[in-house]
Amino acid sequence: MAFKERVFSGVQPTGNLHLGNYLGAITKFVALQDTYDCIYCVVDLHAITVWQDPPELKRTIREVTAAFIACGIDPKKQIIFNQSQVAEHAELAWVFNCVARLGWLNRMTQFKEKAGKDRENVSVGLYAYPNLMAADILVYRATHVPVGEDQKQHLELSRDIAQKFNVDFASSIASNGYGEQFFPLPEPIIQGPATRVMSLRDGSKKMSKSEPSDYSRINLTDDADTIAQKIRKAKTDPEALPSEEEGLKPRPEADNLVGIYAALNNTTKAAVLSEFGGAQFSTFKMALVDLSVAKLGPIGSEMKKLVQDPVYIDSILADGSARASTIAGETMKAVKDIVGFVRRS
Ligand code: TYM
Image (cartoon, rainbow, N blue to C red; front, side):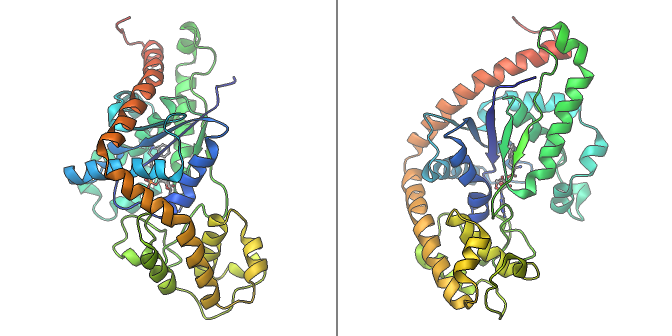
């Protein structure tokens, strides 16, 4: 069955947005808006699966919204909103809690990493998080989901949930006039040279909002001096850059910086190496500083300007939420019919 093509993705309002979020996800969001109807969500319900300070949560919801706009997403053409304003996300997540199997969630590596040894003490929400993520996507019956590499397993789970719902309720889907399959199986879009940006301090760890050292990441709001300092201090090895991509394989830090350069410059690692192969890191890092400051500087300044105007940001979120609610409401009505709930007509 053909579904209307639609893009959905989300970013958590927790801590600082960094280069990994930008290159792995937000640049893709911007590129896709020319060809698709897109819905971009600040996933605040996901954020509270771990403790959030309430005033800080409000601030970061607005900051992520500002980042979307500053990076170039058009809030008039596309939908930008925060998840908690559209109740259907939580409603569909409950239905999916009853579709997904415990064994499926037990396999989620991100939960294992986040819960660590303190498993008994983490929230139930953190465990059920992937079901909410499936609901985020499927409440809009979205077909394409741009994400970084770390979300791949969650996307596979979303597909499994969609598939099981379609199979379990096949006869009800048909008898209620919703065709053969109700949910599409959403496709992840994980492409380009920076789908997994690594820490600047350790090439074996993902760049992340929660890493204690700020030197491990470049934040979207870092100023030029801070960006320069972080890149200069980034861990490297003593060798010159190789001329071929093959030569990056045993060198995670070199691979990471070349990938960042390639993604920022909208090119490939091979093209970067044909320019910088044989160069010392001192030379390459100077070029990377210039490129990073040129690309990120204007975004950081625009974000800082936008967050000064919370009334404007809140109006974007209210408008986006109203438009998102219309689509989500239609899906939830159908889901209620399919599951067998009695609803107000
Ligand atoms: P979050 O908020 O951790 O990250 C937002 C996006 O940034 C990507 N990303 C990275 N990409 C490359 N390198 C990195 N080091 C890096 N760190 C983060 C993430 O892959 C993500 O695309 N569960 C999601 C949010 C979410 C969502 C959804 C996404 C909730 N519902 C529905 C898509 C569809 C998350 O925690 O992303």
